[in-house]
Image (cartoon, rainbow, N blue to C red; front, side):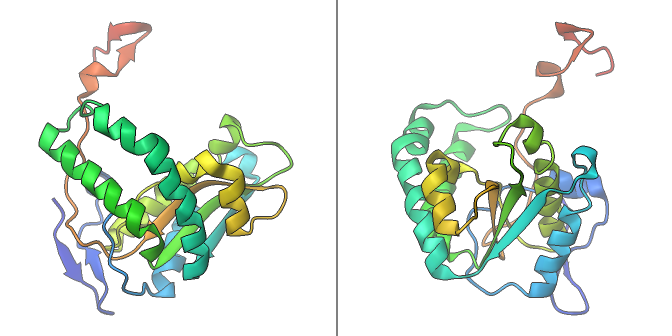
Length: 224
C-alpha cells in the first residue's frame, strides 16, 4: 500500500509514482470532507482527463466543474430518489461481489448511503460530458470514460478521494436540467471530489481465473 506524504505545498499526496500501485489502491472514496480543494489540484485532475484516449481524437468531451452548493443540492434530490427506488433495495438483497467479504460489503453499503445523504457536500464535482448531436451511446462512452478513469487516478495520486457516480442518469432529464446543461450536451458521470475521511487501500476484486478466457468463451486463459 502506498504511504502518504506531504509535498512542498502542503498537499497530501501519494509518495509513489508507480502507476500500478496507484491503480491498485484507487478505492471508491464516498466519505469526503467538506474542506475546500485548491483549484490547482482540480486543474491537474482535468489535465489528466484530457490526456485520455478518445475516438478519432475528436475531443468532444466537456467538463463542468460544480462548486455551487445549490446546484449540487438540486441534483442530490434525484440522486437520493434513485437510491430509494433502485440502488438501496438492490444493495439490500444482493450478494457481495467477487473479492469482497460480507462485512466489507456492508461497509460499502453504509458508505453508499452516506454519499447519498452528503452528495452535495463534496466541495467539488466534475461532471463529465460529451457535446455531440448524436444521442448518448456506447461509442460515445468510449470517448469519455477513459478520461474519467484518468481523473480518478490523478485524484488518488494527489491524495484526493472520489468515486465514479452515474446514478443521476436514472433521472437524466431532470438532473441535467438541474445542472444547466444545454441542448446537445449530455452527462456521463459525476465525480464528487474532496479529501477522504478514510484511508486508501487495496481495491476488492475477484480473481482473473474467473473472468479471463482464451480463444473461446469459457476456455481458461493459459497465461494465468
